[in-house]
Amino acid sequence: MFHLHTFSPLKMPLRAHWALLVCLCLNPSLLLANESITALVAGRIIDGRHSKALNNTVILTKDNKIIAIGKPEIIPKNAQIIDLGDATLLPGLIDTHIHPLMHGDDYQARHLETSSAYKTLKAFKSTQALLKAGWTSLRVMGTNDVFYGFRDLRRVYDEGLFVGPRITGAGHYLSITGGGGDINYLSPEQKVHADGLIVDGPDEVRKAIRREVKYGSDWIKLLVTGAFMSVGDNPRNVAFSAEELKVAMEEAKRLNVPVAAHAHATAGINMAVKAGARSIEHGTYLDDESIRLMKKHGTFLVPTIYVGDYYNDESQALRAQDKNDHYSNNIRATFLRQVGKAHKAGVKIAVGLDLGGEQYNPTLSARELAVLIEAGMSPMEAVQAATRVGAELLGWDHKLGVLAPGMLADIIAVAGNPLDDISELERVNFVMIDGKIVKQP
Ligand SMILES: [Zn+2]
Image 1 (cartoon, protein in one colour):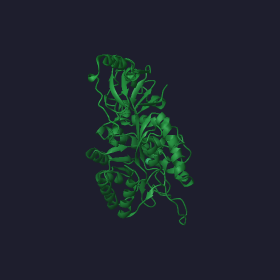
Image 2: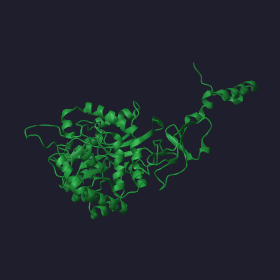
Image 3: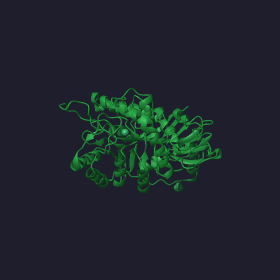
């Protein structure tokens, strides 16, 4: 029979006791205790909370958390020191509107040509690149995949098989027949799986939401109006009926998942805000009443401005390029003014790219901050939109979005000061996620 005995140094003979003390002193794991602390040394810190950069130049991390922020005196002996020179340390960036399984600018066509597995592998590559570009948290806003590749992607990261960004979101966008998530350019006799999840009527809406939650979506994404990038639907049309929207909201609430409402048309925005959507995606035709309602209901706005510029300047022509051109030439300026107005009125605005995918350079994601500045935010407010406000939208503000003791160690750095030149964020040269360094200068 095997017995366990309680070990007590006090019951040991004196000589043995001394031997134990010597032993403790030489125990390499104890000597190395402070070496498990990492000290990040930089010129300044944008912590996501204060309105000015802090000249506290050191962040200490241990395991996956920030344990202290302060002057160099706080660095313990034997800490691993990473001196980033005159760099700026910031919280990891949060993209609250991304479609990582879309690959190829003309995403509806590519959807028809590729399997779920292929899309997921492409998304693995693109999310790795996003992480290295400084984007440590992603909210997937439905993605053009018949199955739930997004869940498998999240799973391999959560299980620690690979180090990747934190992922939350919806597997699909729910769309009406003929809406922004349907394939509207094939002949009527063709039977295809659309890129979105097509639902008509309250029963189908309810069932789709149950299915989404069953397969791992922790957000519900509704295409409440038509869209700009898809073929054959109109962003000025409201898609869902009031009844369908009501059922969607009730079902999501019952299953305890928030709703993100894609809405361009004014009536669609206002209807979704009143029905209880947590965020309005795009909000292109928001009017003063929309702003008033969003402020009243605490609804977040994710204006996804840069995507329109991207489809103008950087991408191959879309099959629906005419809609994007119309937006760029006739609507963009007014939209930016309204976004500025909403920000001034106190509407919470988060950063979302509405891109994602292997075809685009993830460093371009920082340009959403540049257009938010163009819309009237200060550089600091734009950084906060991409960090603290994004975390709040995701319900992760207790652990992410600001640099403070106790928060998870998702930390990035750029060589210069992004408050002087926001394009510095296109050149992130240090990335730590969950305390692990994935990129260093
Ligand atoms: Zn989108």
